[in-house]
Amino acid sequence: MVAAAACGTSTTPVAASRSVGLQLPISPDASPPTTTTTTTSLPPATTVPPTASVPVAIAAAPDWSVPLATLPPGGGFTSVSCISDTFCIATGGGTNQSDASGTAGAGLTESWDGQSWSDPSVYFPPPAGSIPAPIMPAITCIGGPFCVIVDGSGFVSNGDGTNWITPVALKPAPALAANPADPGAGHPGSRQAAVSCTSNKFCVIVDNTGDAFAWENGSWLTPQAFGSGTNGTTALYASGRVGVSCPSRSACTAVVGTAVLDWNGKAWSQEPAPWSATLPGSSGSSGSSGSSGSTAVNGDPTAIACPSTTLCAIVNGPGVSYRNGSSAWSPVQSVDPGGTLDSISCPRASFCMAADANGSIVTWNGSGWAAPIRVIPAATNYTGIGTSVSCSSSHFCMVINGDGDYATFSDATDG
Image (tube, rainbow, N blue to C red; front, side, top):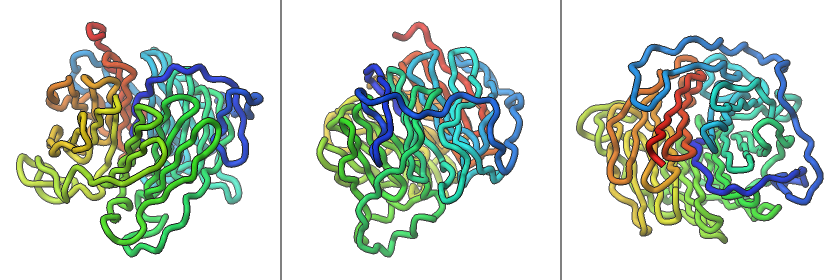
């Protein structure tokens, strides 16, 4: 998400922290950080973002709020993460390749308290000199609150949802041998990243060129780069979202394009993907839909959620694949034939929710997927960002698109 946002499970309290070199600035014994704070007087962007408007009327869905709208930052909302039904953080702004208005400005966050959204908080200042604007930022939050934001321009920041550490650059991964399949860092969709944390002492990051990073107990481990050579590496350079999910410090799975990467607590490795070149359930080329045939998956958005060390689910295009108690992935099942799934969140093994670019959601109850339900309109201004979903539990989820149209799911009968 992006990244799609997967829910964290830790409730580790967050202490003050500061930046040290190129390390992720998280240290429970360090001095208070240099932060940026909530502001309503933001530096002007190069283009004024569209104003919030009343969302397109959508038939009410059971357990869902009516679609509402919040003014998006310049560049649109790119990711959301919720740790409870009264704490969600959405991030966006900066620059992205899907921004119809061509905005370039500060990276921003807004927090939701169960009733309304806060004023914007700046986590990344507007572009100045050689410092690039944040590109397609992705956020994850866990108990504390403790949140980490990573973006495609190679910077990472953390904070409590309002106050943010000044972003620091990720240490570059080792250079690889030239690969003819690699179109270079500037290819469309390349500036994407995803982050997952199990606590304020362990986080991992992946990006859209197959680089993987792990931060543990105050320092970065040696980053790893994939994609050397020519065999089976083209998938790493596909456009679209990337995703990573860590149910524990020794078990993370990432999806980059159509490649799947695994972390075992010491090192990353690449495993066979759960799909072939096509997905069942749709006809024609990538992006088309129908009741039969197949859809090319290379370039489709991808996301992953792992609610436990034994269960992971990946969405890609209209389909989903599982790894449940073994190293083998299930055959891809088409669960959203008319849509393209952008994100997935699984707070527990018996509950997952995935969202598509049309504003529809599909829900897993532990045994099967329900039919798609449309809960927000499709974005009309920031159309290429995708739709983000985050579930803090099986009875609360938020779905938001790039335009700031959002809705919340609440099921008080489900514990």
